[in-house]
View 1 (tube, one colour):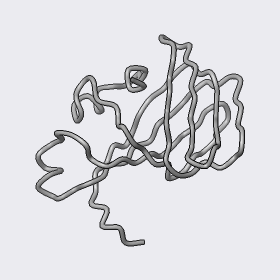
View 2: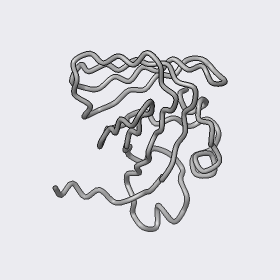
View 3: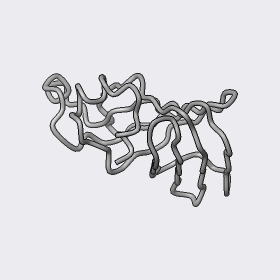
Length: 128
């Protein structure tokens, strides 16, 4: 479960608990900055969440995933969009990360830190 590699788990675990990892995510955008990446991901709400999310009829949430101090960054079939699968192996500042996008784009890298920020829920009514 990739969420076990998050260094700042407090916000994530306060919302989703200790063992939750989303089963399906979509990428909104990817920002490369120096030797770091910020990926904005979204997912449908799949499990028990804060009551205020349910009372407001939220059906999706989004968050930013920061992958920091990257080494050996490789991209095949460049196209950072769509359904996203994330695999993180290793522990304690030595992570091997694989990100696969629905269009056969694959990113692999090694990084020292992984964190999450700006978890927000909303109602996606399908309007463009």
